[in-house]
Length: 125
Image 1 (tube, helix red, strand yellow):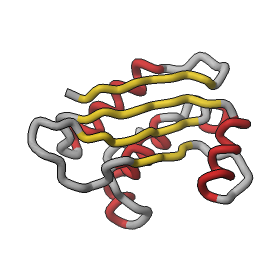
Image 2 (cartoon, helix red, strand yellow):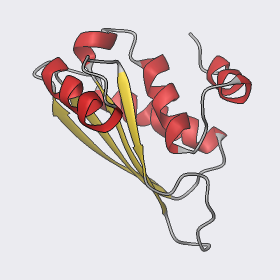
Image 3 (cartoon, rainbow, N blue to C red):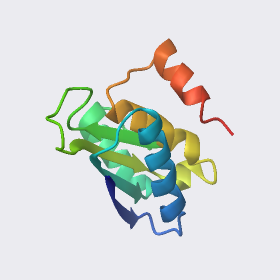
Image 4 (cartoon, helix red, strand yellow):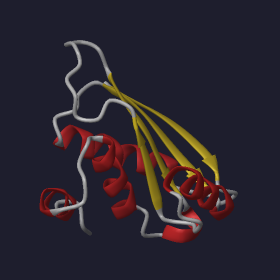
């Protein structure tokens, strides 16, 4: 089972349940059956601070990922601790699905490139 803890600190109404459902679909397609994931929606000021503090770039962005387990192996029956995907609704607007997929793939250990792009293409709408 994939457990998702959702937090909305953005100040906007967001599609929390739809985002969690999409996350479960993406993770299942990537072969992840047992995992724990944090999914947060934050405002542009918090996102800017996170990007500045962790990447050294002082600007808001659509999504950030903070992985824990990456692509490493975990014992059978133990859920993977994927980490947190953080989205900024004020930046992504109604187009939150692609940034969420992008962030999830980073949590699974994928880096920018052909392999990640091919995986993202599956989820384009």
